[in-house]
Image 1 (spheres, rainbow, N blue to C red):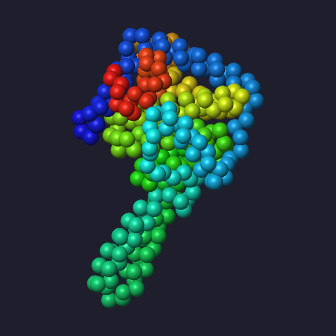
Image 2: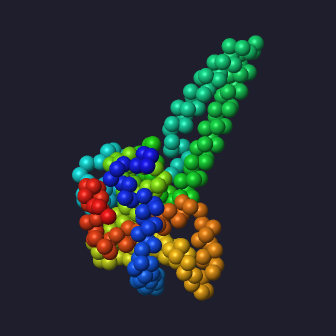
Image 3: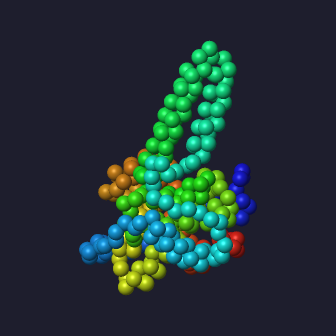
Length: 298
Ligand SMILES: [Zn+2]
């Protein structure tokens, strides 16, 4: 298989899907989804305080705390430097500026050499570069805003939306930091391993938020975000598995239709979450450390 580290071949999306489609798997996913839903409904009945958005400095301090816990959970001692920032229009993907300046220099230079009036091509190029830079920045800004928390592999940077409350920020940091650590270990991975990366990140995020919930007198605010996502992912994976195995459930026709039309990327996330939830049942939480040490063999 192209570009897949040998150890990770066992974790391709096709292999994780196969784990979900095993005989007992769908029943286990359904039980986990129902347990999770009961917990979520119980929490929703209480008062949930997600905290206030943090300053950029406080966010970086929180990232340091999250990093220590997540590194310990994954059994990783050293990681490469990374940045944490709120999503801002002017703060992101500086490579674009370099590309813009390069294009400007080449195009402006070439046109100036052939033009009778040197200012016309120079001004035209300047306007073009500024417009391209603004449009590209705008696209990246809106894309990151829609995603919520994200990790940019080229910049080695975690982005969060500015209005993210404190407890959601902790959850986003744990997830995105795991993406950073995974890329640190194996480099940029092909799309066949996207479900694997998401499963790892979801597992570390849940572990971190559960341990933080305990540390803060079982404050449910720490759990709400990851439980909501886990809930949705497990139900989607369950229904997807049922449709793959030809088990249609009465009353769920609309849900089945939605899942068939779901973008592949979204389904990939659900496959990763559900497969790792199953693996946690089979092994235990040490499975994450074992994977990072390349010791676990399915
Ligand atoms: Zn992710």
